[in-house]
Image 1 (spheres, rainbow, N blue to C red):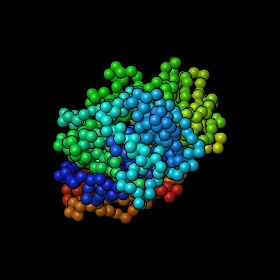
Image 2 (cartoon, helix red, strand yellow):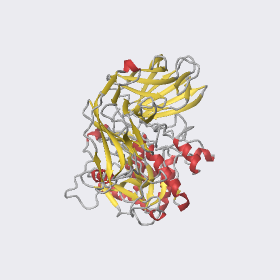
Image 3 (cartoon, rainbow, N blue to C red):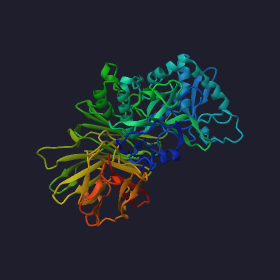
Image 4 (cartoon, helix red, strand yellow):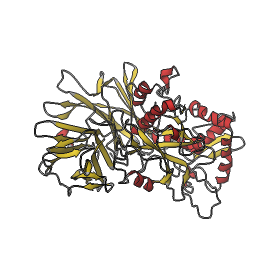
Length: 637
């Protein structure tokens, strides 16, 4: 499992007066979010699946088609397309234009070519198109040399030097308001990026809290959210900041699709004071949001029973899950628009699709907080690679309270198949498992059994020697746990899941992922401990060992406007590491204990203390065997 950049820190302090609008590069964005002058600042960024920086647009946009570029960012992230340098697909547009180079499947040019055909009622476009091998060796169109180029040239994946003028003129169809209206219908009807999965919520002051809930939910579940700004432009929300007293963000962060400098650095916008109606729906103000345009949450599992979008619907009654309003079902199994890349698992029982799960090669963990049984299991793996599968295994494990470890119960071999899809890169592998009866895929609680829980591991072996896997497990199986113990036998436990599933949460505080350079566990009350223990079970397939950890306590001095370190870093008094064979889990389990250096009654986290230092937090720096470092922060709410 690869740890990327994402972070959460919740706060309840009042915000200052609205600052000047901010349009920042990535490094400047991080400096802004981590400014020590923001003592209880809060931020979280959606992490891209294959890059260190947050999800965002791939390149600069053409005029009037910002919505297509915003959709491309969501499509890439959610597995409908895969951004690949050097991939060029030829798409037939019409008799006048013929075949045009649209870059990769799902690129803005790809969408635009399809829209041109759809809007003008030309001959039905072949969205599968063809991948022209000789074009793959052409100049990398995604790299732009700005020196000496005419002002206004737009870089793109489909537009090499000899095509730039063509695409710039082609995109003027975006000036036609009828075509803009057609665009959303096209994206649904042609099922390029999902079907029946688009909503358009215009802002009203009565809905300001609901809108902030939607922004938080999408970011918390790593789903890009398309929004309309200035009432005529589109961006993608990729993060939030500054949690207010009501627990909702007061700042939204978007990837600006209209600005990208010649070095390829993306620009990010800061939308502040979301709790203030004056910050919304101001026409012409590029730092106000007029509409939310949620997309693709159905196929990310959000509208499954108990899914995060379904739960949000029950709270705010905006019908994010359109199927609840009587519309046709979103996308049926086997439809061409089911997301192609990533890991997709379908659990069937009694001839009906019981549940679907999604994960990624970079983070193959799914959390299930109830019981799920299958008499047929189907899985698909695709990461753009060319390797073919040679075998697959489904192993179920049970947790034995008597032995205190996970034990294998049954293994089922799968039937594998390899296919390539027209217009898509790489091989998609499918594996089907047919156990002799209904098999528990996962179970959080089992009564009257030697095993109190169940979890499953699906492994696919490839001809190149690599294996890919996905873990489906109950809450608490993989993640990071901090235990604050006292001599009277009481303790506070803080836990964060190591997954992208709907159940990532803390025992205390709000939901987040332990997939971060910084991970924050939130404590709303004053907490003191007599000893502290940290355990890590991150399920790292490579067996990467956590070398060690060091702990520091911090206090916020209002007079100086900064956090100050209260002690030199403390090494743990005891550390232990258990191999997968000892625990039955994937990857090593590491534990660190501070019970001597941590003095009785030391404060773990607190806010509103009397005296010069009013706030306290505890920071644990983790050092891994591959040289990476991560920070774990227990902070006041």
